[in-house]
Image (cartoon, rainbow, N blue to C red):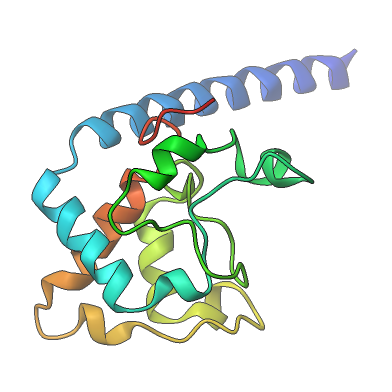
Length: 153
């Protein structure tokens, strides 16, 4: 009986934490400055992130199980330039703003192998040095990538 009570309280605590995180994600998405999102998208393109990451959850295989709702083709193709990706050597980033917070993304961009051992991703430390606003803008852009960013099918 004691274990059942402990499990019950654990389930309640996890549910409350999940609800809090969901609300925080929603509030964060609404508060992102559009100019930083636009600059961050430019940084994403200029740094070549598209060569290893996609922003297109495909409707085949395990994509939807791993990365979330599939991306509407029409919406993906309406971007200029289209950022569906060349190859997917790293994770799909279509919903990364829902999966990772800015702190995790910053650490991963500065020292990828410290966060993901064996990562082939290069360091983007230079984006965060000398008051460079490009690093912060990239973080804001990554936070903006969530299911509500694009219309989904």
